[in-house]
Amino acid sequence: MSSAGGDSQSDPRAELRDIVAGTREWLVELAEEGLDDLKIPVIEPAMAKPAAPSPPEPAEPKAPVHREAPARADLSLLRDGPDWGPSPTLDTVRETLGDCTRCELCARRQTIVFGSGNPDADLMFVGEGPGEQEDKQGLPFVGRAGELLTQMIEKGIEIPRPDVYICNIVKCRPPGNRNPKPDEVAACRPFLDGQIAAVKPKVIVTLGKPAASLLLGRDVPITRVRGTWHEYQGIPLMPTLHPAFILRQYTPENRRLVWEDLKAAVARMRELGGRA
Ligand code: URA
Image (cartoon, rainbow, N blue to C red; front, side, top):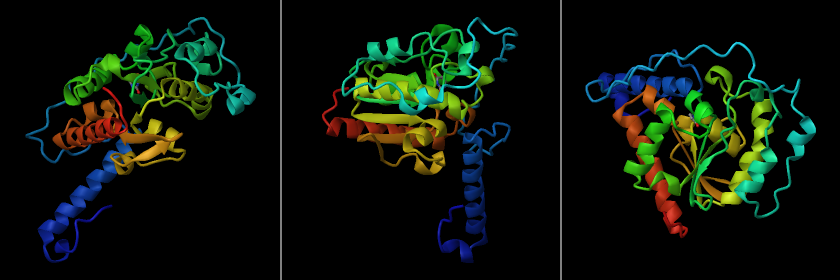
């Protein structure tokens, strides 16, 4: 937990403030890691807009849609992945993905959600995996979290959404929006790498802990790494909070953090000659 500094030792109120701030930071991290039942205290309730109640999740389809999932992922394919060469096109990557049955997510998906946006985008966003709306529509970030992401892009950093490229770690919806399992992530990773190789963005923004952890190659505490620069395959990478998390914790502070991360990402993209 963080401490604001030496003042708190002589001032019990400052000490209490430190404890509350540190505890809140820890709870935010736990919530980001998937402990959604936690009710994180919002320190400035008067300023926070309450999140709209989520519509009830419809029951999962009882029967699998029609594809047979492999008993286990094909590990040889996971290890090697396709060789994209230096400049694949998004079409090649999509064609190679095909009507994928490389992991068990294929059994219950309605559509593969490959990605959307400008194939030459200078700014690329990587989320976790499709939700219910995305699975229905075949497009990433078109549900409630997607609406917020669209606002962040179009109103926040003032770039038309079609000018950026948006995709996810996994291309099929994990049932009930659970976190994708390691073998599912491994099965899809070559296609994310193919998308990055095809788009060649100047800057990548990861949304939430799973995308940051995957591309940074280690389990990262998102609240600590957000707002700090990293690299993926030589491309500057800025981790930020996931819009679904912001919807759950719609505080001025969380919105400010994302705003700062996106502003930094756009500034870096422009420094590197990006156009949007
Ligand atoms: N959350 C994600 O991570 N990706 C989507 O496409 C939608 C919601």
